[in-house]
Image (cartoon, rainbow, N blue to C red):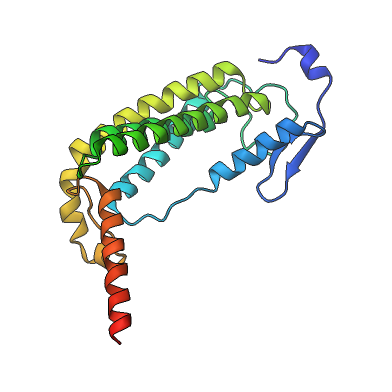
Length: 228
């Protein structure tokens, strides 16, 4: 919690108008941090597979748990003078909980769900490690930015990260052990066929599968175009 000296001299805040993420006026580094935070939240993929739908369902449940914990603990945010926050409570940090849920779930997906399908094992492991390190760096950056932008204290960010990691592990194994066996039946529903919802749980490496299928289809289309 902020001290009385910190609260006695409130900062003048500026806002990114598109998303209303605030940062202290005159702080170059903090303004860049705010923009980076906006860019991260703009990454919203198109959802068509049941595995992705389950993942985003877990994100929603993770946010629900964060709301519940905030209203149980009721720990106030630091005295930052923000006008855009939707709740006065800061424990645990929702951004920290979100990003660590995302990262832990993705780690488990990369190393437990995706399997080797070609001979370039070293190359595949290399890009997995690079992607994992990148995600870890993003999670650390987001966590740090919440304290740097004066939205949260370090304890609020740390507890949020722990809650997100626990939820990520729990939801991953619920998806794999409980929900995945139901995916073939759900994919066969008429409404699933109408919205092109598919079950990819039996495909060992979905990224490699989509790459090879897309490449083959592109080559076939080029051949058909030349014939015409």
